[in-house]
Length: 245
Ligand SMILES: *Cc1c(COP(=O)(O)O)cnc(C)c1O
Image (cartoon, rainbow, N blue to C red; front, side, top):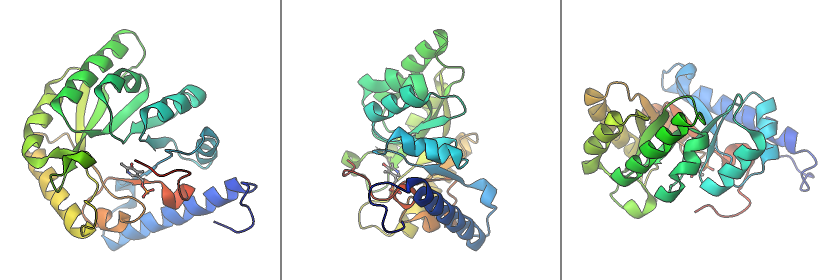
């Protein structure tokens, strides 16, 4: 962020500079990990930021965005539409909000229970039948690496069954896994753990290739351990206006 623009006078230049720096950082991480930069998607996380920031990012070539709060996301989708945009739901979702998300989400990274899978399947089938969406919903299972499910994610013991459930549903497509390293954990070890869990699931579900891992503070470690999508908020848009849940 440059100085002297506290009132947002040069928001576009700030975002452009930050986005360039993150793209460079991601490319360097891929090179260091001996990976093709084309294998890793940069997903800007726009939660808590206004639709005007998303418009700036669109002008800078971004077309996929991550949102974590259903209500906030739904209002931005209403404002900006979905033409040429892929919206990703990456935060905890309550079952009674499945219908709203089914109307706009291209994918959801944070599925962690059988009941949510059932609710999403029903909601997406309804949206498909009504012509409100054209394709199934991509579902990533969020893994709780330390088993503390209050922070989101399913315990690892439940993943095989949840994966089968998604794969058997009619309106959902099992696309992969997501995890956030536990607080104060070693990111390298956490992402190595996620990689092993994912490899296991891939034996039964070879189509579920996505590994959503890595944020502002740990994208290098995630790329080293096979991330296919880094979800980056702070490094692109700056500190969030209010504390995230
Ligand atoms: C907010 C959020 C991010 C982005 O985090 P930063 O540290 O700001 O890059 C990534 N993933 C999830 C699930 C989030 O809620």
